[in-house]
Every structure is written in C-alpha cells, then in structure tokens.
Image 1 (cartoon, helix red, strand yellow):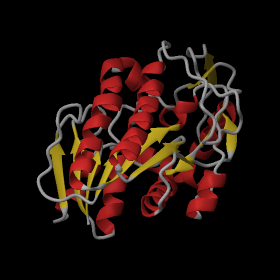
Image 2: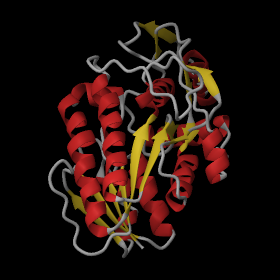
Image 3: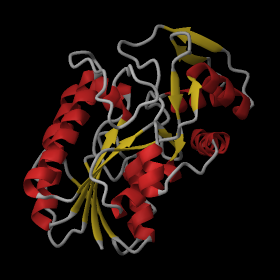
Image 4: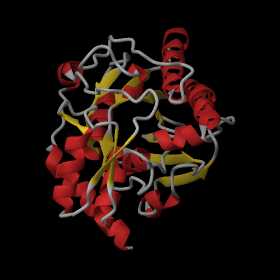
Length: 311
C-alpha cells in the first residue's frame, strides 16, 4: 500500500505518516512548510518507504507511480495562522482540495479530507452532531478557515457522487500532543508555554467558553478506522469530555507545577462559545472512542513542551 499525505510535515500529518509507515505503507509526505516543519518527519526520513516532497498543493500535484490512499491534511489550522494567511487558507481549502481529489481520481485511490469542528461555527446546537449544518459568519475573520473547510467538504462529496471517488471526511475536534508548535496560538500550546516559563496564562473572555480535547493517538486511530470503513458521510472524531478554557488553564498550571497567574483578555471576534462532539456515529460505525484520559493526554503533551523549551 502506498499513501500520499498532504500537509504531512504538520502536527497531525507527521503522526499519521509514522503510523502508516509502522503498518507497512510506503508514504509520500507532501508539504510546503508554511506551518509544517521537516523536523517533524526527521525520524521518518530514515525509513526506506518514506519520501518527502516539498510542494504547494494549490499547484498541480504530480506523484509518479501508484497510490492507494490520498489523505489531504494540508491547511493552516490555528486562528493565528489563518488570520495571518487568509488567502493561503482559502486557496488550500479550495484549490488544494481540488488538486488532491484530482490525484485520487486519476490513481483510483481512496481519499480522506481532514475537515474540522469549525464547520459548525459558533454552534446553536450542543453537542454537535454531523447532521447539524452550522452557524458560520462567512465574512468574519475566522470565515476564511471555516468556509474553506465547508467548501472542501462540498467538493469532496461532489467528487464522490459525480466521479465515484471513494471518499472519507473526518471532522477533527481539538487535538493535542507532541510536535505542536510552541507559539501556534491555540489554547493548549499557549497555556503550556506560558505556565512552563512562569509567564501569565492568557485566557480570552471570562474563560467560560468550552472546548473538548483529544490526544493525538486517539485521533490517528479514528482516522485509521475511518479509512478502513465504508463511511463516506462526515464523521466527528473528538473527545466528548467538555471543559471551560478557564478550567483548562487551571489544570495545566497545576500539572506544570507553575506559579503563573491567569490574566483575561478580550474575546476574539466570532470565537465559538461551546464545542463538544457527539461521537455516537463514530462509536456505532467504527467502534471508536477516545482511550487516552484527558489528564494523561495533557501530562504527555506537557512533557514534550517541557523538553522543547529546554532545548
């Protein structure tokens, strides 16, 4: 089996590349390193079945030889990234997904789109089920990411219905683990970096907005199961354990043994008030649910951040 992983040098993509290699796949990792890093796949580089290709997927994708799977993960994924790279975010969601689907169609490969819980926007339904259509501001600052992923889902289903491409769509809820960037702007990297360096921990709004966090190994397991299934409709993969961001900040400070104080800053525009996946379909169709306890996942991630900050 041979797989193309776009965005393969990113946080999630690099873990997916290693997982596939460990299961006997040859892997073509494609990345333009806007937010990914060659360091993330340095260990995979010594594997004889691994190839790293520097390429922007918004340009035509040419991969010589057969492909069995195309897993499209390429995209800026944190609010800081897509606020700084709005055009690139829209292009990779539209042109990049179109090009990746084109490769899958040409090669007769199974295709996976890494979508996001952000397609639900600031949801009016809680928890979020896959049949909820979302509450997204298309012209707000976060719209470039939300709408890029919504378009990506639409074109994926169009290729599935029109060209019979064998497609999968995973809606990823907040994930964490080793190889997250120290300053990527999301809650866990920000809180952990601040707590470990003794800086004030910055909470936006009053911290009452909720999120749910899954460890990276659970997400990869969910993607693996989805790729082996026949489920073509979107599927939530996330941890239904919900907590407020203020609770998360306090927990990270405690786990880090930090004396950092919590400071509050204004809530960003269109920031979702709640986020929690309904994973009933993943349980029923994949036999999947998260296995890593929230506290254990945070400890493992914190250990990695601690080592990274010492380096």
